[in-house]
Image 1 (cartoon, rainbow, N blue to C red):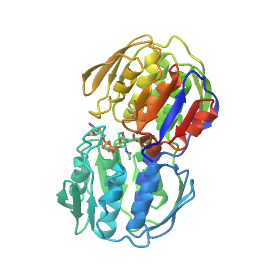
Image 2 (tube, rainbow, N blue to C red):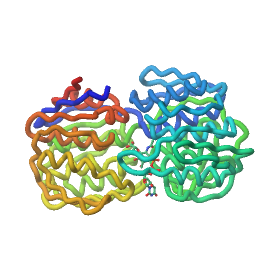
Image 3 (cartoon, rainbow, N blue to C red):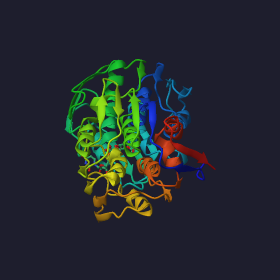
Image 4 (spheres, rainbow, N blue to C red):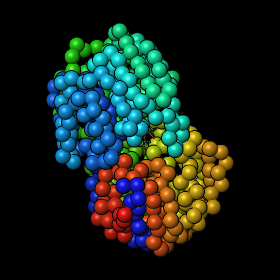
Length: 415
Ligand code: EPZ
């Protein structure tokens, strides 16, 4: 698995149509929330990615029945065992922090071996623990090992200590009659709220930074189609733009990417937006810009590396300001191997002059979005590149090379 690599021969203008899959960052919290009921939950448009497979194994480890056919994911949590969730599984998946809330609600206790930060940053979970304390839980251990207990979770009106995405999702799943302020509002947080309302919850303010949750006695089973993955959509749009191709990306939700479209226009990429698709046209004379990430609805940190890769083709000096993660500019070292001359000004800031004709090289994937970025770079580079550590990409992108190949890219997976 870890020896898999991509071989990419650049220079092909991508052409045709491609459909975006279900959102990884929505599927994970929704699968966790499905544990709140002992009735069957049926999810569709669940992406066939490694993170979903690992999460499924963790659910089975605590006695939950799951069935997945590559699209439809069925969950039946008749009971949930109050056992320690083993490190071997949890360490593979940062998103396993999302288990804290449903296990705490169901069993009034949760013990989870928890991995600390990862390559893109420390990624603290203080925001999660502060939310659980506000809701009446006691944190008995919170380092490599998390242990939380409660006599009774109580709803309240509290403010997150930062607009953490999974911190907010944990708070929503654990909350009773509650108001959550400084809530993250990413499309996947919104989709979790819609799913919980389908289970009988009464959540209002969806899409804003203040959520009102009315307490309900019981949540019932539900069916839900997971929202489309705006991060995959953005990545595929950039694949079209960086190769100067003409591609239609289907099954998107345009309003999940408002600032992304603004930045594409600022760079000079030509595209036409429909109600559930975007068509990218060949564009030249791209212009350098300043790219700054922040919480939704600002420019998403998860599209920073792919977008910066597009900027290697833009005229002028582009400046990148990654305000959320202190370790998310590492992919620039890989682009340096391809001929870019980036200047890293701090763990959060970098700049580089363009346009640069990237040259093929052997490059690594630093995290799943950095991995996608170096694939995009290889699509635009002259010659054949090799991309290593692509299991990162498999964590969050379903059938990535198949989708690119269907658009004419020369990419193959080799052992
Ligand atoms: C979620 O991670 C996503 N994971 C990440 O996606 C994504 O990069 C991240 O949100 C940010 O959008 C899932 O949804 C499963 P955080 P999470 O707690 O919840 C800092 C991917 O690529 N921060 O929102 O762990 C915070 O300290 C993965 O799909 C602020 O500084 O992220 C942390 O360092 C990777 N101020 C970082 O941002 C804020 O107001 C992310 O925090 C909020 C957060």
